[in-house]
Length: 482
Image 1 (spheres, rainbow, N blue to C red):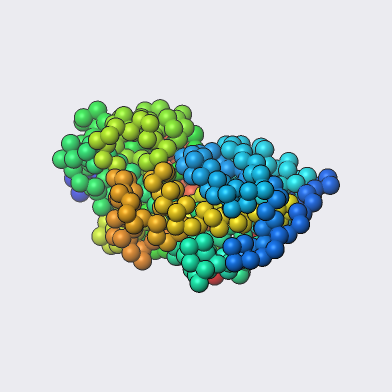
Image 2: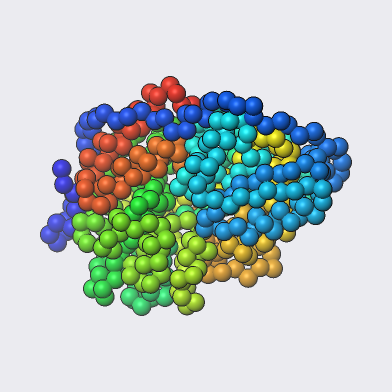
């Protein structure tokens, strides 16, 4: 089945007609998910818990001031410096403690054997392409409950708990099955469509609010030798950063909730089909930068900062990650995704914003109090300001921007959040079912479609089968929106 275009002839097929069309979706067979299932093993002698310290006003978690702390950080778009600066504070507060700091991009490769052996680090930034599946870790009771941290006094004001200082939604994101909080998302990420305002202005165009307007802007760019879009072709799970909120805009947030809940036929919703068809048009009409399917995130961002493409779906870390190649006058901006038309269920401005950079304290960590204390320090106003200034991103701390001159991208992200208001969505697939989201929906599904190797109908059929397999897989824990 081919693409259904909205531009056949003069008037063409109406966008809303795409919404009304429901295809009968079949099933195909795929392997079941087994990502990180070995984490259930706890062979080996494992860690011996360090002796707890004495609790005090300055040490509310009872940290052992002479115990070592093992901290592993994902070395990605935010770099290492913000963590190193927070470690200095820890070492100042606990001069007898030695912090072993390990930055890496090989989170699963390096840490799965340690989880299996029962000797994981005390604090982990579980992010990146090799992110461990947090749904699996929670389901197999591999993580410590961070409620103790959240209910402890904050660094800046002992009358406020850490929980009281966090942005809305951060605590809930770390919950998987009720009250316990298993993950602390440190960054506050704005996802959307990123672009150079300078380049858009040079085309005498404004950011498109509808898909017909998007196609028109891409055609303008194409005539100037500029591709409309590029994306991380080797990591096509970046595409949902704009695609998922578009689905919510078109069909309502309940469509995303059904997808997260792994409900039968959730991917067959007409809004999903309409949005897949819309994105497929970018490929079919030649608006994707040539070679994009072979580019990784850095290569696609570099091509974009070189003005080879106008739009890129990404998160707010891109301002820092692409800084080396971004011209000083690039005038970075972000917008919520374009919709289909004015009859979409949610207004223009609907976007995805949520906690990012998930930090975890393993249940079998030798020094869990130390891991939580390091997080408590990072959630102070000083550490938050340092993070925002150095990596150009908001943190989970609700504030920390006073007195800071916001960069163009950060300023645009704050403005986009203000425009979104209550129309912020937060798909949970990427933290509930990491392997499903990245390897199957992202790479095997959407990635193949955008490379032109599968139609939207074929892709939806494939993805629904992936979701059904995950829903029936008794080896993984399942979660639902409450």
